[in-house]
Amino acid sequence: MLSRRSLRRGLPLLRTWVPLAVSVGLCLAAGCARQTPPADTLVVGQVAAPRSLDPQVTTALNDFRILVNLYEGLVRYRPGTLELVPGLAASWTVSEDGRVYRFKLRDGVRFHDGSAFDAAAVRFNFQRMLDPEHPFHDTGPFPLAFFFEQVARVVVEDALTVRFELRRPFAPFLSNLAYPTALMVSPAAVRRWGKDYGRHPSGTGPFRLTGWERGGQVRLARFEGWHGGEVALANVIFRPLTDPMTRVAELLAGGVDLALELSPDNVAAFRARQGYRVLEATGPHLWFLILNTRDGPLADVRVRRALNHAIDRRALVQDVLRDTAVVADGPVPAAFRWAHAPDLPAYAHDPDLARALLAEAGWGDGFSLNFLVPRGGSGMLAPLAMATAIQGDLAQVGVQARIESFEWNAYLARVNDGLDGDADLAQMAWMTNDPDTLPYLALRCGATPDAGGFNSGWYCNPAVDRLVAQARRATERTERARLYRELARVVQRDAPWVTVASWRQNLVLRDAVQGIRLEPSFALRLEDARKR
Image 1 (tube, rainbow, N blue to C red):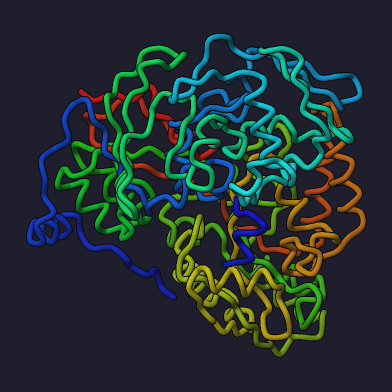
Image 2: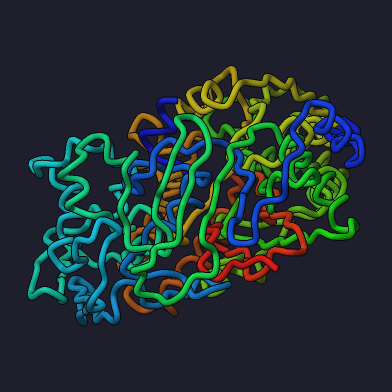
């Protein structure tokens, strides 16, 4: 998921790969072959260098993969699921009215700098984010602090008991505590380093920072004082390799032990390559097209439904994305099994029905659309190749889509200001931690760009707003699930988006690497990793 503040600042199948053998040859010719890392050191080929190692100031998945090994939160996800289990909190209780959460903390936990983790440290973390008068609030910004905007007070009852008092019931609260924004930082380290804390992190996790080349690799070492037990790896190195083909070449040449986010074609090639394994997992991710519901032809729901029927989502997943994603429906990702609506009516690929709907809406002779597309970006799933294939599908029903592409940050600035008369549809992707996040930030009437939200298509249905509000207050999970399923049916009927796919995150690793699994939360936890 991308933050409010950071977002506002900022064809036939396209073959974007070269054969693996050629990649190795290019790497060797360029001198990038290197010795295989030692058995006690894991080298990870990352997409980019981190912006900050302060979990409360960053929103990037790339950074989060490092942070979850340095830090821990009060709660976490059970491995392989999105079910919440204790983390630094040994247990918790919730009041009957859903407004008071009391956490009992683990005893004997210490930060990497030797200071104690206790209830006062928990209070410091949240006050730092939420209280403008806090002496270290200026170490922000804290772009995802709105996850905890319902927190009225954080009270230290004793050294190992902390109480959160909410202004009103807020059902996503526990889920938001499992997100990296709520990872616990050392108050002592923040006091020491101030605004430079992000380069001098201190958490309670299984690894500690030992080196960070500016714009380059991050080195972690095993934290001998970790309360969670013995860790097999002595060192972990995160190497930023922006070019995906460089990640492929380094993996083949032995420079990295595992590589993240390779192209669909290279993932397919590695599936059959001896000596390597491909891990894939579908998480709470949605890739969709935002439709301009306020201006132009797409203001008519019949036209929006026509586009949904015109686009062959299954072909996009199979032919363009090479099965590195799964077809998705509705605004609640299927990874949230308890809240997803499995019986949601799908928009089948039906060009004849699409043409009939367009004729009924008075567009039987066709029309043109301006289609905004990024050249890359977090979770965007081959955006140019996808756009060209979608352009072909729409042409089959008489809709001419003119593609206009942008560099990622320029794209976000353009789309997050809202679609207008010069923009009819735009690609977008979200990775979320709770079913509430995407509807609340991108589908409510009150979440339009002029109100500070991400509802860039100007969709508004008061019934959706009412369901979002009710689901946020519902303290019973079964009732929340019912509300999200009803919300999904309303949104599916109104068709403000064309929901296309959920990404199957991928990781390619050498056979020698064991003990790693992909998590639905997109975390990359390495405490159980080892090498033969």
